[in-house]
Length: 84
Length: 348
Image (cartoon, rainbow over all chains, first blue to last red; front, side):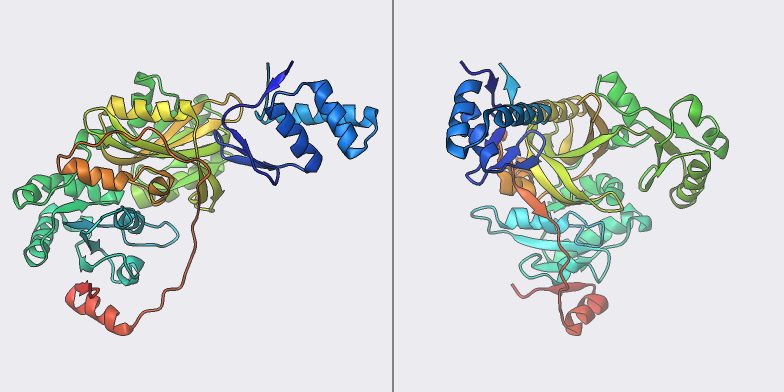
């Protein structure tokens, strides 16, 4: 079950460029961030996202876990995701 | 239809005339003519291609509204004018005074009332906002140098010292406040306004009020680049429902009639919008509105002619304007024509 939602006023392009329509702010995501964000947008849960990223990017679980938490924290602080 | 528009100037604080003309000209099916009403022979809009079909010099507001009316009517005899859009704060009073005389000659306008102009003046806006529960930075009027000493009992430094019409300085202590007070009072007179500084990003809304309390359209923009004079040099359309609702509320409470610009700051601490200013005319970035889907200048012309317009309800976000500086090359013959004759036809 998804634990985060992406507000309707957030748009992401294929290149990983995020636009927040309520403030006009924009952000650039790297390849991993882009994949994570798209999965969040599609309502994947935390475990599903980590499993997919670990498989696709060949990362250590402990590093991935830490990076994911930091990424989520940043997205929340900018209003790009909300907790369900 | 011939529409006369002022504000073809484009210095570091550009006038709204050229963007208004672009908005009208680019409306699908627009077949009218545009007359530029200018104060100076070097206003860039005179020399730009596809902007004004012809231009006429008009007297500065300081010459008085009778002189203005006579000049406009003499232009009207040679070159029929159907509608006039004044675009500069300083000329609005004069155009309001002569609007009946223009109307009896067949020239339509769509102006705010004198009462509306008074509400939005910097010395009245605070009381208006408090009355209608619109957040506004704390504000006190300074009418003598003695009043500068009393500022700390009302608000903390840093704060803004503003002129009644133009000019504003951010000051950090008593000495800077006193220097700003003298600088502004010698140029713009009294009262001077001391305004609390709210930290945050600046957001502006261009809107059109129908004069009955209704909003015909409203487009919000966040400034992306601000010059040292505080002018937005780049901006992006955004949509935040509370901001648009605030714009509707201001228009409803003032029953605003005409184009306008609302300036807000979004508090970095609370996320609330504070109303900084109501500018009584379309802003210089107006062209962003039709590009985003709301051609407000065109809508104003339609309403002024008595046509029914359905209010705009949406627009595209993520549209960016980036203002540029471009050296336009022209010939001395054009400059001679406007200087000697006070008018110029652009050959269309």
